[in-house]
Length: 405
Image (tube, rainbow, N blue to C red; front, side, top):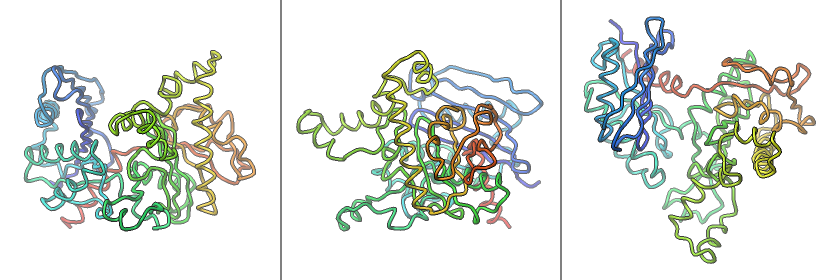
């Protein structure tokens, strides 16, 4: 029997998201989420997608660590006949946030790979430790199975040095690995490729600006299937206005807050990452609630929305200049896929660049990739639902299949 299943794990500091896929047809066999790991009561929501139904099961119980959480996940999968001991399981694919410059493609995990991921913890202190914990736990559960790391940063390693380097003293930058790495890479890779398919072209023939707009948000300029610039930098803080992150800002604000405001580095870190962006501007980071408040005449929400759109337009224009020729602008992720007012506002006024949105097409809600620009528009505007789990599963399965060929 040829093993065709891939389990995708996305391990956070106190959570594990997972999907089990059958790569023969890219179908999902089960999905789930474990939350509040290490707290008094953890919660597991598991949804089997086989047998024509999608009835979820939930359990609440103490799960002290990721090993306990993954053992609970394994029990739920086994109850559906999809256990981790199945000979049909080909590999486990792990989302790893930071791969630095060393990891430019999916990589089978061994001790040396784990050591390098650990070495990158200082530039990804919130993410890589949790990713490492998930990997080690999965290795303990299935030591015989290939474990594959798929890196958020990998897609962006094709950026030229002119885009990746900051204008910082070279010796200092190199010593401390300070450069633009970019994130959301699996999403940008998937969406740029799907946008080309939507246009009926090969990825290498298409230039795309991808706007991944969720609570975290990033933009990328993709030329012929390769990233040439992206908005996030050394960390996911740089770039667009996000749900709780400030995005671009004069770095001297940090010095000012420390010297004049008397704030510590940790306090400023929390401010910029967790108390800024939309939630800092208006107290809400849910775009649906912000739009509801705007419709009710709330001026604070309206200003927050204007600031959000202003930054978004700046990046569209900047990446248009970087690419020279743009075939499509693609919106994706929670806000990009569902917030029609954001898409309309981001494009309005850019008609001279060949961009326009058809109001009727833009208002349609759909889970399908689709064009929302009028036929006369020189540049296509698309909504392309992202699928990072499928991208991780595809890359994982392709790698282990090539090794076994």
